[in-house]
Length: 406
Image (tube, rainbow, N blue to C red; front, top):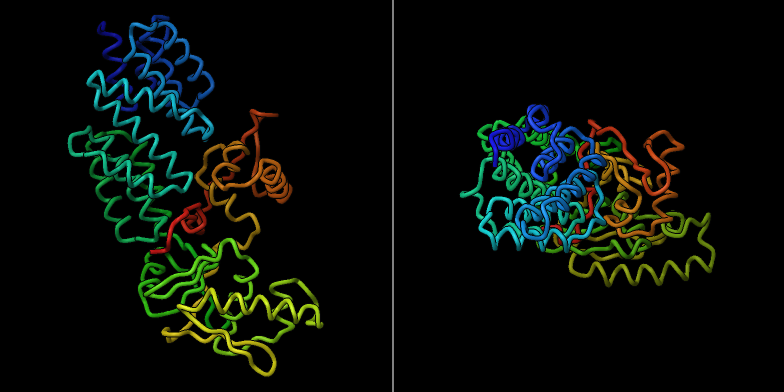
């Protein structure tokens, strides 16, 4: 490797994309193409970067397996940053195996972290933790140490472990300072801002109170019965019940929780669960069936008792009931939560993360665009969506996470 290539590689490792380009911008050999591609990616020119990396992979040829694998890893990172989550992960895994076989443990670890970050976006927290368990950041460069801790913090935030998230971000900050890469400092600062911002609301005495993740963690550890409208679940300090797939039951529970310790009339419950105007005989019959199902689902936590005018919630152990409401009162809050990271997303990647249909996602985006809440660039399959980061609240509770609330 000649001195210009070496100098360009060191510049890229420091995050100095322009310094790297000054050294290799006019060269078309395989190594220079790869470095130009990475530099263009650091500058945000993702389409050009992918083209250069693919040219580099072809130029290296089949006999330079490790160099080709590094190009694949770089392309995978571009796909992650540009939120192309449908990018073939098998290629990344094959590249990681090749790098490990050739003794390039740093780039192999980088490939693992890319896969972990993708899994984090998809809400597969168990898989992320499994990946992290197989990595020892102590023997890796400071930049990868910082990435490791950022992923740890992301998992902790989605599990509503605010204290663990703060500790991970403190470790990430120390590693970022050692690396000297400004982009890492900015990412950590953004994560801290999310952690410090309101993440949900509770209503007491008719007044909405904002809660940070620290407040919510303390609330979950208290004796209160918490009806979580961010995750569509109910819990106390001993047990939790998920109702995300039972929207009618959760609508009834939320209405009962909001009125506790008072009861709720049958008319109000019908309006909350079925959107009916009054509780006629048909709606009363449906209400009795759903209340029976709700009693069965809530058995470890609370009962639902009939009163003269309706029903009342009766916690088994908890001295109080708290309804935790979303920070965004929007039917598309989960879409806005993903777009609030400031990246440009495709509708297909949003649909993949939120486990919904492509057409359903397109309708949601068109509705948000008509309201001026999101904007798009491009056309057809190249169309991407984004909204500026929203500083007034954190989005961790709205992000996908198929996990118990513990």
